[in-house]
Length: 93
Picture 1 (tube, rainbow, N blue to C red):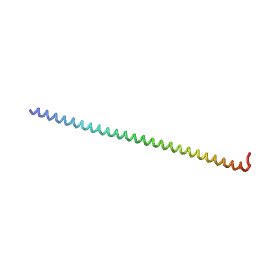
Picture 2: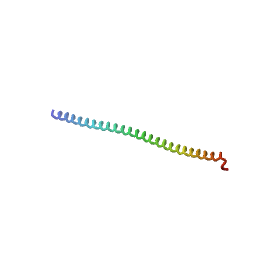
Picture 3: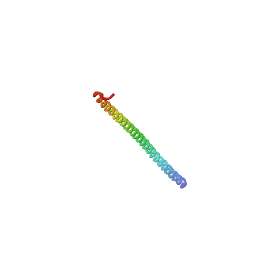
């Protein structure tokens, strides 16, 4: 009879150990899933930040191009006004 009691006790201990291993595995799996979701979220935020940075860079380049074209147009207009002023005085060819 003590053999059966010992066997039952060994079975209970083995079952307890197996359940402990399973709980540990499920805990680690859950932590891994949470970390993976967090990494995916961080990648999404990084991609959005990079897209915003690229857009800001394109906008600043476009503003620079426009300011250069405006300056050239103002210079051409000023040069034309100077030529017109001389034309009205009878100077030039």
